[in-house]
Length: 143
Image (cartoon, rainbow, N blue to C red; front, side, top):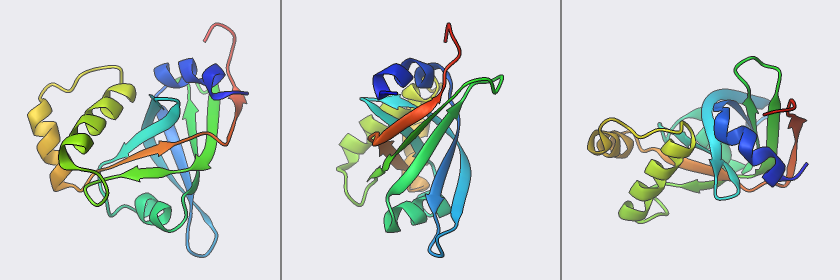
């Protein structure tokens, strides 16, 4: 499957799981709100010190799994995560990216963007984009 085949599914199914690798090689999973942004799987980790972010800083290999509300469809995107935060991204560029990924992961605007911006800075939020190396899953007809 190509990412373009999976993109419409990911644009409308935002429940997800990220799988990363722990230092001992074990898989660590976390529930995320995910979506598709500029040809990549995307989500925001609102806490920059979370286990998933620590794992991704050490080993960028991960899988983002997007599932339908009824659990009858799913798309997995495997790849090397790209992390964007205040350590490597200018503040204004990060602010715009955080907002764009928020919208991509929920199809809506935040009710108070200024509050969102402040919270993301305070929590050291990280945008995670995963360019697809491999895409697979089951997309039911009509999705």
